[in-house]
Image 1 (cartoon, protein in one colour):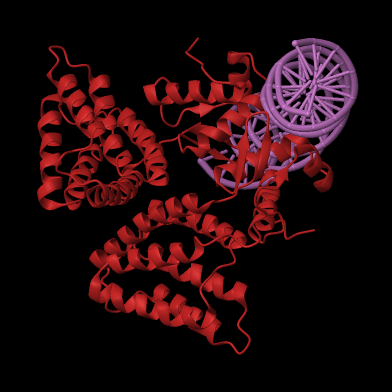
Image 2 (cartoon, rainbow over the protein chains, first blue to last red):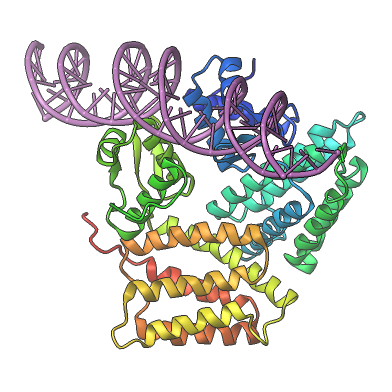
Length: 217
Length: 217
DNA sequence: CTGACTACATTGTGGAACGATCGTCAGATG
DNA sequence: CATCTGACGATCGTTCCACAATGTAGTCAG
């Protein structure tokens, strides 16, 4: 029913659930019942349980004792907090990158990622998902280029959460502005230093922080 | 056999194992066999399994598929990476704190934590564990004062890992220098800005990074 | 001594069961 | 009429048992 690559059942299920969460198939707040999932996937409840815990460890689900798991839902303040943490990682990564490898010839990974983002945005029929993916990839490349594995790993997790946020609040950067804004970002990183990244993220957070689409209240 | 507070068995076991890991009772690299633990605690294997996964999520244990779990062991480079991540969080927290609440009257929590550290160090018979705890508490107070929940949460996790590192490499700051170094740190945070924190951590990492005590090779 | 093969140990998963807890809803109470 | 209470069903937390899959170690032949 899905790609399902992975050595162990729990891994496969976790990945599948993750993709369903990030695609919006399982909407934020949606309850994840063990028995139901076990039936749906033809797995034992223990296996489902383990996968749900794993999902919770990635903060894509929230489990409360005796109350089960549900897809994580980020409110405005949670989103702000999330971006503050992202900023901490990305700013420091940018600083490390500048210190260790320099910014003038951008590292190849960054150049490639920036080019990919340009390409995705310049497509005749821009695919929103592709653009978002390229966007995330650029930020990731920037962080990874700093060469600090733990910062990179932590950032990857946050990127998933950010994608989750995108699912609930459709408010996102228009495709045509995406490219120029990030080309700008790279320029300003050279001129203004890592702080440019903080401002960039701050704007992104404010944009996404607007009223979630489809709020029921 | 241990405090064991918590609503669910898995929680209790996780906490107990965590304390045993952090106390050095379960040394780094030590294998954590499900059946053995189940017998020792009188719990089902599934329960132990869940606790081990939880421990792994906190990076206090490492599980490899079909090879079981073992207490996490940090080598020199892992420790360096860990402190780079810590630096990212603490520096940003310090920046936020300065921006939001100012540093001149230090927030009460920081003052208290600093006083506690002074007291622990000045004791007639300084208890190493108490000093280390007070040390961690000061760093934590500094980060928490910034008021960014996600940064605080992430930092708490890293603090546990740092304590784990202390377990393996006994190399740590002498008690008498601990107090002055941190009083210094607070001063320099005011004069030099958040960067002072980075330097502080860098020195700490280098100190701890020395050859682990009791290396068998 | 090396390599393949076998036997054991341990993990991964399934299945059934049962008490505990949560949520809900009807009925009693004021 | 609002609310409190208790019963009931749904779901979770945990246990026991079983077995296949995998990893590890030890043995034996060459």
